[in-house]
Length: 365
Ligand SMILES: [Zn+2]
Ligand SMILES: [Zn+2]
Image 1 (tube, protein in one colour):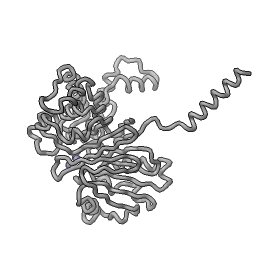
Image 2 (cartoon, protein in one colour; image 1 turned 135 degrees about the vertical axis):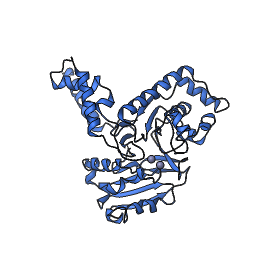
Image 3 (cartoon, protein in one colour; image 1 turned 30 degrees about the vertical axis):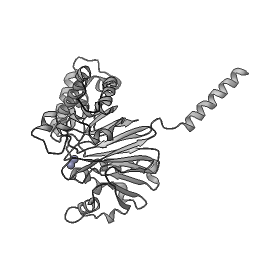
């Protein structure tokens, strides 16, 4: 009898766990667009080359069943052979505690892909508020807005957040003659614009949000989202100059102790400080340096060069991780800059992880 009772209690506990379990993450990030400057697509020739290389690697392997083939593809071939980093321009979704509100960073062509996916979710049946945080108004960050399907549903609401005074004008004008046949009024959802000041702190959809001004032609803004002791920073289109490596700067304070740092790095260190200086972007090496100094756990490289093929991006990722590995053995703090914090960073060897973002990447913290 006692044995039966034990089983009943166990069964009740399992039911309770399934029914009432909370999500195991504070926030979930989905990368819908990670390419910078202009959307890119794979050509037939590139796809054919991926196939040829995969088949060459498969020679002599035992690949009779679909299971064996899938295992081989997933475990034995590198990412750039089996997939692609993608070609949509910037858009990152951040899911938090609210069921009827979603945070999005930028409205690049990835916003369209998010909209298509959103329609397949249960929440799409209810009125929804989309908070879109705009880094700035360059084409690659706004071009998905006219194609954002949920924006055409009257019960929905879009709130654009940004720090540029002309944000509303810029977004309205790209949806006007002769640039686009549908005006923003015809989108039908309720659309509003909230202008924040750099350095502002406010609450949106359950997140505490901080803003920072960034060095970029026309200025850009970065956003930090904090929730339940977890944090993610979205910082794209930001140039950090060579001298920023040798001193404290407000950006380091902004990203300090972040769990995830989405960092604009389409260039190598030499490109960023040489031929592409003043183009408004940073390097992978700067990303590693800042992540180490500010104790960032996970550095996520973002805003990829549109001329970089999948193999080049794969090698760029590998070179970035190699740089971190070498540096962990030799790192010395820069003199005079945040000495006590530099020591902490040295001891704990941040960042713990470096990813190269791709369209479809999902991260949870
Ligand atoms: Zn950009
Ligand atoms: Zn830009």
